[in-house]
Image (cartoon, rainbow, N blue to C red; front, top):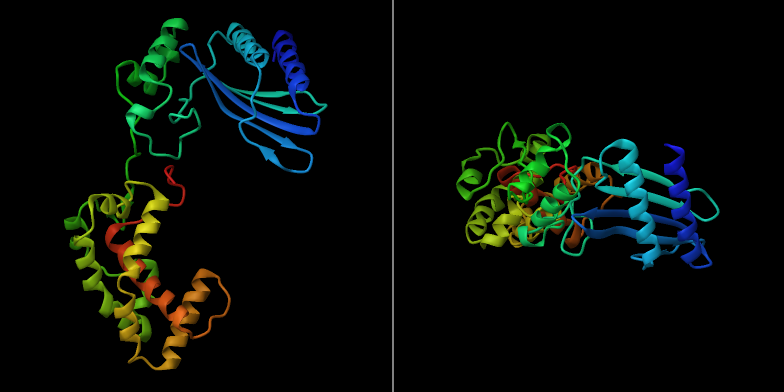
Length: 309
């Protein structure tokens, strides 16, 4: 970092110190300026007792200093940064991370949206802002990322990344895909088919689950197939599993108590939860566990690191 950048960063640091509340401890500030539009992506103030004030309003002098810092960095590096992440701490020097090539991916509120599904009309910066930014601060072919070239050509961000494969096949995306999968449980849960208690549940719930899935709305199917992200998929899978609880509980009535207890313990070990008791609630959760695995097998499951949560 050149002396001029350090000097400009220190001027920004002093400006921030001048406007912070008396008990402040740390400020994380992520800021972007695209095509003449400023985005305060993150500006949360942490105070000494650990509380965090989200979206702390910063005065125009701080914005002015951010623009100055961006210009100085551009002059030094020969390329205009797209965003800056600056960390301030009471009584200390500021630190800065510079983003020159990564897309600034925001929603209509100007907040980070890497893990959100954002309709095209709500994506920020807009396509026009990306075009203006390139006009204001031109780049050659070597420094213009492919994604930026797409925005200039009018192509918005994709709402979802490409779905991964599932059990050696393409991720199912239609009811026909789901019904074509011959397995009833995922490979890692094959014990369900061998366990006396779970096997009875399995026999009782597979057909009703698929029948209920055929009556799902388009929104429900979007969630079930993972097109709305991990949380929506998990919630829809649970909701569908709950529709066959009564059938699973009826099936358990013919299973010896010892076999039911063994199934409950196996589920507890896999989920790393406390030693279970044989109660109506624990039996219900066992049915939901088996039914959810059937749905996972047939409809797929997004990985834990999937960018849309």
